[in-house]
Image 1 (cartoon, rainbow, N blue to C red):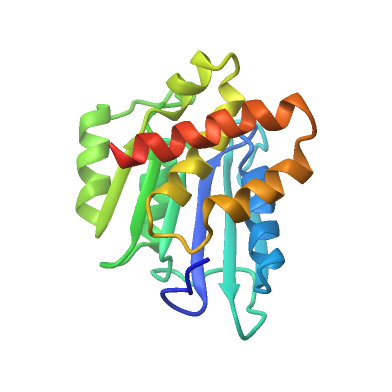
Image 2: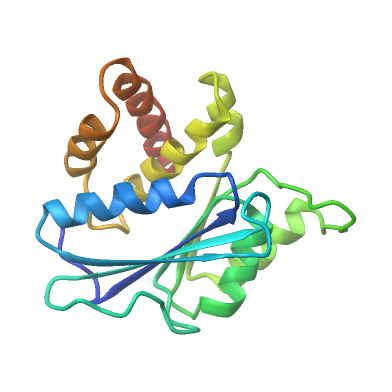
Length: 199
């Protein structure tokens, strides 16, 4: 595992209710804890748990236990499960050095108009020092279930090289969390995420 680029390292996982970002935060948190890091996780929910805004804050440190919520403008990495939510969180918590990885699949709320995906991507890129847009949901559907988008995004985060957790560390956590055939399928999704971000 590489050392932290800064301490604490502030990661936000942004999505909507039902996408599984709580699971992502727990898996990433376990991987860091196994490596001897302090990890604090804070969860925020919108008005509706399903289809409402959901955000997980992870604060990772070698030396200290930090408060669970990241101050405005202080995110180092934003992992977005939905592009509009990613942009919203980026506007509040981003800064000139923030790095963003986002799923490209829009989830439309009833009665709301959305800009084109191209405009959303342009805005994300303009607010990020570096960014990747990953077709995680489309690739997950090829594996038989859209829930694998979660694992694809974790793979993209690890494969980007911006994150101190490596594949070996994450694989140990996934083996404990998903026994038997579930582990194999999740590793296929994880490897697909690493592959997509490397393209």
